[in-house]
Length: 131
Image 1 (cartoon, rainbow, N blue to C red):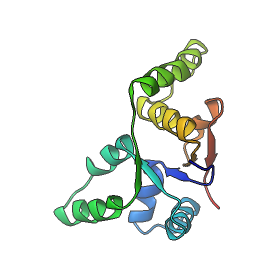
Image 2 (cartoon, one colour):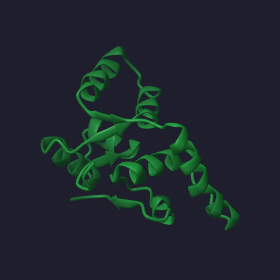
Image 3 (cartoon, helix red, strand yellow):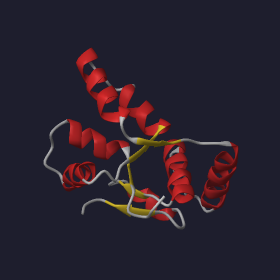
């Protein structure tokens, strides 16, 4: 995939769906307009486990139905562990879900749209919080 494809982290989707006027929500709206969005299982899980109503669930289903989807495979699980191990040895613990997102982004050459600063600790990961 091309480097201009964006993998929004859960925080971006939350701001977007809650109608917040934050730079990350605006960036996600821009990326959606330009059909540059990729998603993955871990982001979908984090969003769907937090829905409060069936209407919210249906809105998410519709929104995610047409997005490009990438997923972890055996090689990516190993890559994720190899990303995490040296960080942990140096006292840096990245959330498990974010290591998965980073591994997917690296494999598919994606930009992670996030405000989470710890992605910056992972070598090779490219992030943005606005466009």
